[in-house]
Image (cartoon, rainbow, N blue to C red; front, side, top):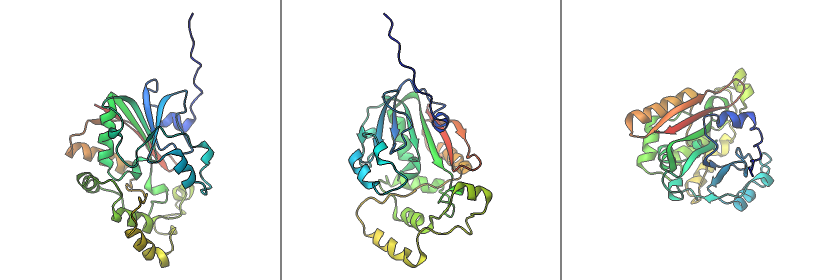
Length: 261
């Protein structure tokens, strides 16, 4: 008697674009799903990864109107900020999905290496990344290859205070439609944090001992590709960019897929 698997539901257009270069028939992980899971169980053999468990995340985002905490799934791998290579065996995963996660990791190159470690040869990482020109990062300076290497050589496990300052000093009120129309620009965008209180806000952050989340990495789409190529030219890392979708009009993100080679 033949058993037939129930067909998977069609993926939403955004998820389909992000994951289009992945073989989703294998075993995968999805970073930071929060309330917007891309690949849902039981349709996919996927484990959810985050720095904290579901209870903490639900409490942390309870008063955030943009997060429906009822949709946050149970987290399978709680990292506490550690790298995934400390939780999964070498070459045990077929694919990795990370939507708006990569820009938050303190050590971008170390994060890539850890994911390549757990991927099988030919395995792939798909990421969605915000384009600085069309989001609240539009006033911020773009990250450089020297920034990437500094965080890697320091083995950074938290954002540097410089990154924290740059983030909170410069984050601005912006939406992609206005940025594309150029009614909101780096010159006229309004700061989110009041200038009268920003120094005191940062002074308090300087003495905090808890983890302060921020966008550690800031790129336009073309700068991201350039930086990935720079990393390959100066560091022996076994990855290739196999697909890239630049930021489309009236949106704020681009998509890239890396393959372990």
